[in-house]
Image (tube, rainbow, N blue to C red):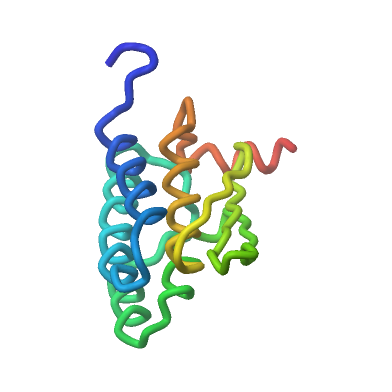
Amino acid sequence: MQSGELSVGQAHLLGLAVDCCTATSSLETQLLARAFLVLRRAIDDQDIGLIGFPDLETIRGLLAAGARESAAIHMLGSGCGYMLSRSAEGHAIATVCLPYREEITTEAATPALALIAALCNGLAQADDFVPESQIEVRARLN
């Protein structure tokens, strides 16, 4: 892969971010299920630092209960900060603070989609994925 090119994982993350930003609320559950799979694969393939990423059963249970915002928040893991707000037009706005990266803000039809879009956008645009094993070490150094 040449400098400036996206990896397959980054392309999947960016594609999901775009889909979340452009989707209607009727696609929310489907996109959240896809988000789990894309993020899980990125964690497994590239060791991205999402501390405390949930298991599939947790996400399935939350989605089955209609707790879509809770599912999205769980997918942020315990190492990301976030803030939700609403635009004057009624769109959801989410800001996600990834460990050791700038915060990312996105707008979508629902808070859950905005959170996932911001998370995926931030991870995909990172010049380097910070391995989870290094996050705790860096945190102790700061």
